[in-house]
Image (tube, rainbow, N blue to C red; front, side, top):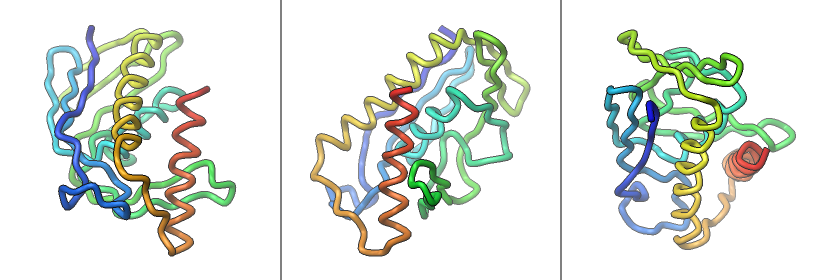
Length: 166
């Protein structure tokens, strides 16, 4: 297989199962061809970004990194079905380009690999499902009092489930 991604050492920012901490972190390892990409990332954002790449192209360094360092804020659209996650410039990124029944994955150094779309979906779904399972194994999150933060979190999961189940 020419693409894989997994994460271990899931944790909340303070290391405890905090009901108000909405972003899951972990040690992510991705392989594109023979290249290993490794980063302590906000894996909840990674999972959503990867779900987006199932139907949308992602161009390196033009949007959030696929392995982002952080996600400071989650901003919802009016319908609460899509989000923008604001973070810093740190992380690891690659391009995901759709080409008929496959995706082309390309790194900044020019490393390039092609993956059948069905295989790519299987890998992305497995990663997203693992992240969601960890959320479900923890204390139920407390929705923020702030409307922007609350709407962002609700929209995050609305977008996640729409993309995961389409």
